[in-house]
Amino acid sequence: MTTKATENKIMSAREAVQRFIKPGTHIAFGGFAILRRPMTIAREIVRQGIGDLFVTMNGGTTIEEMLAGAGLIKWLESTYLGMEGGMPVAYAVRLALEQGAIELIEDYSNWSFSLRTIAARYGLPFMPCLSDLGSDLITYDTFGKAGLRGRDKEGNWIHPGIPPYKYVVVDDPFEGWGLRPRQYKNVTESCANKTNAYANSTQLPTAYTGEPGVKVALVPPLLPEVCVIRAQRVAVDGTVRMEGLIGPDIDQSLASSILIVECERICEPDELRMVPEHNQIAPHFVSAIVEQPFGGYPTAVPNYYDYDYDWFQRYGKSIGGLSLAQIRDYWQKEVASTEDDWDYLFKRVGVSRLSKLRTDPRYHYNPELNRFA
Image (tube, rainbow, N blue to C red; front, side, top):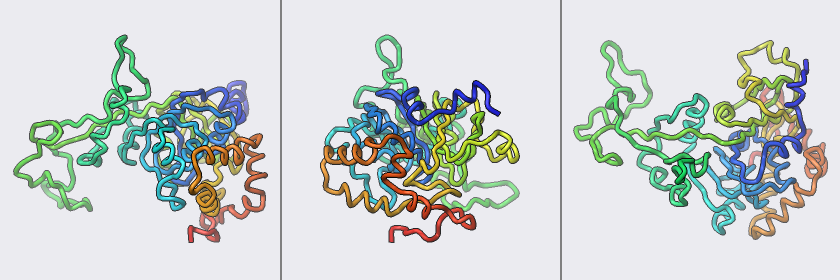
């Protein structure tokens, strides 16, 4: 059942982008690798030519490659810059970084990025992280070198989306008590991990803090202005249900001020209430609902359609060796010249190709497709 409040949430991609995404917006795109990426909104950003974006992403660059190729990214906060089998490093992203079109890039690991989204979801000041210790990620601080961290003379954050520190390393106040594997009083440790360097150490490290102890890196929450995700179904009231690998989508969705959800289908709330434990995001978090079947193309939306591996191969051959200006022309012709995503899907992909990507309900994917053979 629709109401005035829910009707205001349902809009076209054009309206959602016009309303919520401005030049310089700090925006996080959901999905992971080439799975359930919100391509509809990303393509609409290209059509509207909204630039100077501060883009945050975790794992895979299908969207970021397009936005970088279109010349719309100013800063990039990333975990992985590959195109999942299509190219080891996303070509336009690499050129944009090398030539300064993307001014700054900040790196986290997939895990520390995810921990940042968890901190944001629960309103925590930080989350503890061990995995990045010992890596260059701790000391390589692009935003810090650019003077974007901390407060200005008036006491305001220099940039509200950039934390005052990339990491803070502290000594574990619990002295490593919680690390596994560990000793129990009456039972044998069941943890599959068999190494705990701290457990039997006679000399604890002094790195980072200068004092001997178990080291823990604290990571700040991720706080983008806008998050965009793709779901299979969204009810008219805004209830969201995603299927397949979720990745960081739930956590970062609840971290942003504005959440845009694009979907394969809008349904009545009762359809999702039948199995409510499968729903992940409550209506009041959702700012906009955009219905666009096949809008995740060329990435996969489990139970609906598979990746178009051929597209990734064709793309790599099409832009390899081109200049940034030539790549921008490519995206202008490929996306910006289309009216909307229906126009893009009909003219650039075709109904025949889309139908061949449909998943087999027995497997939830399409076993007949080329897999980068």
